[in-house]
Amino acid sequence: EVHLVESGGGLVKPGGSLRLSCAGSGFTFSSYIMHWVRQAPGKGLEWVSSISSSSTSIYYADSLKGRFTISRDNANSSLCLQMNSLRAEDTAVYFCARLAAAPGLNYWGQGTLVTVSS
Amino acid sequence: DIQMTQSPSTLSASVGDRVTITCRASQSIIRWLAWYQQKPGKAPKLLIYKASSLESGVPSRFSGSGSGTEFTLTISSLQPDDFATYYCQQYNSYVYTFGQGTKLEMK
Image (cartoon, rainbow over the protein chains, first blue to last red):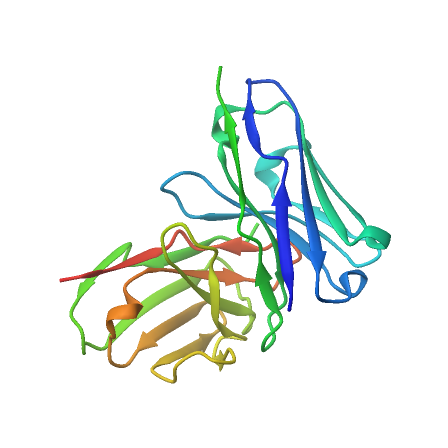
């Protein structure tokens, strides 16, 4: 069974940094493009970033303006999101996801909450 | 980035109703569109991919249609479990985007 488990969320001050991790299991992690999606409290879904299976292609939402960095470690089936210069508007639940648009291949983690507040 | 606009933002309906949610893209996304259902405190669940293909295990009362810039999600006969928030998402470009969501509430 496929599992995606995020960790690393918490409370951070404005301007601070945080590193989120996502552990994948139950599938061949190295074969899939992986994504981060976030959801501010009471708001909609916002796609954040994606990374190709071999890390050769990386994309970010324009709104992040270079503050976030996605990476992966296929040997350990893990995905990371390094978040710098955090702002109050980055407060959200961050989901790790395998957004494969094909039958039975779309999976999401349970999310990890990041709160940016002084 | 491609902008996705859903309407309505909120929809009030009753069990047994037929409901339709619309999603418009700021440029053609061909048929590279997915629909998700999300319930409070849960991760989204894929319902439809490639505009009209039903995800495994999703009831047949859900259907999707459209191409280019205009798409619809239809629920033919609302069931109590269907009251949730629905999102469209384009994957035509490498930078994915979601619609702002449609909250389906009980009338």
